Image (cartoon, rainbow over all chains, first blue to last red; front, side, top):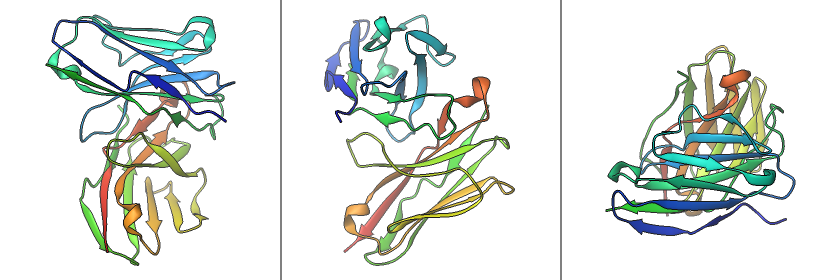
Length: 116
Length: 113
C-alpha cells in the first residue's frame, strides 16, 4: 500500500514570496491533515479535511495560509506572502475515518520550507 | 487549550537498558493516546497506540496509561542504538473541536553503544 505522498521535499524562498505544497493521501482515506512542525516542537495542526470539507481550521493563519482539497483526494496548502517565521516542515497526514477513536494518522515525508 | 507535556530530554541510556518516556495531558476526557517515533529529518511514525487503562505490549515496546493521573508512558526494553530518535506523545480528545490530535514537543532519546 502506497503511503502519503508530498511534494516538493524542500523549498527555499524569500520572504513575501508565495509557495504551494501538494499532498496525496493514502488511497481510501477520507480525512486529510496539514501540520506545521517548527524545529524542536511537535506537529501543530493547521487544517483538517473530511473528504473535501473543512472540519477544523482554527489554527490556520487565514490571512496568509489557504488550503483546498478538490474532489476529496489531493490537497494543496499555500502560503502567500511568506514570513520568516513560516520556516518549518509542513507535514501532511491522512486517516481512514476521523470519528473512530482508534483512527490512526499516517504521515507523509514532509516539505521542509526555508524562508530567507 | 489542551496541553500535552513531555520532558524534552535528551534522555541518554546505554545499549540494552530500559528507556522510560513520560507524557502528561491536561484534557481529562481524552480517549486515545499515541506514541510516534521521529528520526532526525524524517516524518513521525506510529509505534504504539493505547485506549484503556493499563499496559499494552508490542515487542520491545510497552505503553502504559493511567487516565486518573492523566499520564501515559512508553517503555523501550533492550534499547538499541537504532532507537535513538525523538518520541512524540499525541493525545486525542473526546469529540467536537477536541477531537483533533495534540502533540507534545517530544523527548529526544539517545542510546549509547
